[in-house]
Every structure is written in structure tokens, then in C-alpha cells.
Image (tube, rainbow, N blue to C red; front, side, top):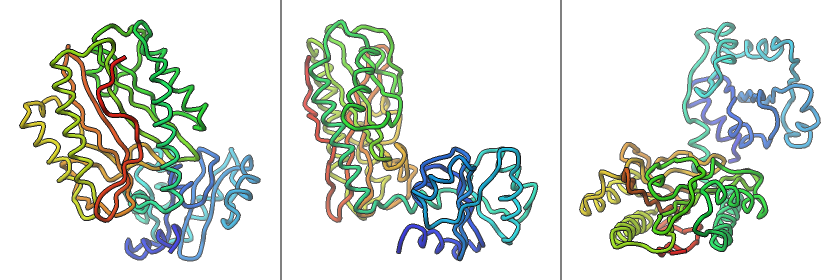
Length: 351
């Protein structure tokens, strides 16, 4: 069953006549169409419409030839809004813009059904070609780490290192960052999503590098923490304990395991080391067309891992005034284990 057929199967389960798709990643997933921030798909049992303006007519023909184009005009949405009225009940994504929601709500009212993560759940289990692309994206992340190791030095700023990482991602084939590259040193590394600054690297600093790029539409994500000059005994001790927790999480990943049980095991180990109070986020997340997808590897998640899901395992500790450590790998869920596809060294590296 192809992707579109899987969505059409959901129409019956949701008791709806059509599905309006507005999220860019879901539009690409279903139709291969990459253009137009205002593009939409309208899917019913028999109809496959792609709705966009005349700037993208030729692109639709190239990327989505099996879809029927409904061409809109900048001055009027009347054509596609009228099209919606042929269906009794229409599902829409809760990520829809307020502007578009108001348009369809005024015309359809009670005929609308809000849905959350319907297509995202289809995207959780990756197809062979998606696995291939995610492996290639992870290889780029690994290669960039090998190359940035030759650049890191005392006296450089966080921003200089971040800029070099972005350059290397693109030089190795990525179109852009998958998210804002995180390079934080010393006390700044206590900020899980800290932004690179003009702070210079100093001897004894821990340095967290969290980055990834988009390669042929798929995101990479990897984190490593290294040290500048020398590592004191506290840093070495905390790093070893966090690495043990991260590797425990990786070792538990396999089909049939509940996501929350992985998070619980990692958190319990850090409780034993009196470090859990510094662990302020979930253990990981899904990865694919977006850098943060379901499943969340969190105590809140009831999702059971299935073969060919792609997730991250990334515990971290963050201590105000001291610094932070995070180690993250991307892994593919297998029937009885997992495959780690980010292969950069996880030993405590000192520069």
C-alpha cells in the first residue's frame, strides 16, 4: 500500500469524506511537491487535488504529475474554497494557519473535523528509500565532526565554530541546517538550546556541538561534547556517567519496547548518580522530514517502537554556572536491537 492509499484508508476510520493537507512536510511526503508555502492537498476516496498558484504550475507537472492541479490566483481563494463544498465532512490538520482556518470555517462550519498527527503517524515508520537517505544524512554529520575536530582551538568563538559547521554541512551536500546549530562552551553549555555567541573558548571549557543538515529533504541530528585543553575530575566523572546513560538508552532500543520505558531507564540511572535533577528534557525523538517528529522518547509517550522507526537518544545534564554535557545518536529501530547511524567518537575528546 502506498502513502496515499494509507491516508485514504484513514478517511474511513475517521468517518470523513476528504482530507485537507496544509503542512509542507506532509504535502511533500504525499505528493513529492516541494514548492509554494501556500500549497495544499485535498484528498478524497477518488480525488487527488494539489492547490497552488500559477508560479508553480510547471513544478507540479514535474514533481506531482499524478495529481490534479487546482490553480489559484493571489487575489482570490474562491476556486478551492468552492471545491471543498462538494464534501460533507472534511478533516484538516491542527497545524493549519489561522488565516486558512478562518477561510474554511466560514464556508464549512460544522462540516470540519480537526485532526492531529494523522499523517505524522504514517511517517513514523520509514520506507527503505527514507532509511537510505537518513543514513546518508547521518554520514554527513559524522564526517563534519571529523573535519571540525581539526578546526576547534582555544581562542575561537562559539559563533566561529558554528559558522564552520554550517559551511561543512553544505560543503558535504546538505542544502541547509536542519535546525539552528548549537555551539555552546563553558557555563553557556548549561543552556540546552543555547545560541552561539562571541564567547571565546578557554582552557578547561566543555564544548557542546549539536547540529545536522537537510540532505535531499531528510534531517540529520547529532550531539557531541568535547573539552578544551584539559578536563578536571568532576567533568570526567559526569561525562562517564552520562555516556553510560546514553549507551543504556541505545541498548534498549528495539521493536516492541515502549518509548517511555527507555526514558524511564535512562532517568533512573541518572537518579542513581544524583544527576537526574539536571536532566530537563526527554531522552529523544523521531527524525525524518522534520528534526523533531513522533515518537517522543519521553515518560509521557505510550507509543510502542516499531521496526524502521528512526529516533534519537540524547540525554543531557545542565548545571547553572558550571556547564552541560549532551551526547546524541540517531538510530534505526530493528526487530531485536537498533543500528546506530551517527558514528562519531563518543570518548571524551580533549583539544
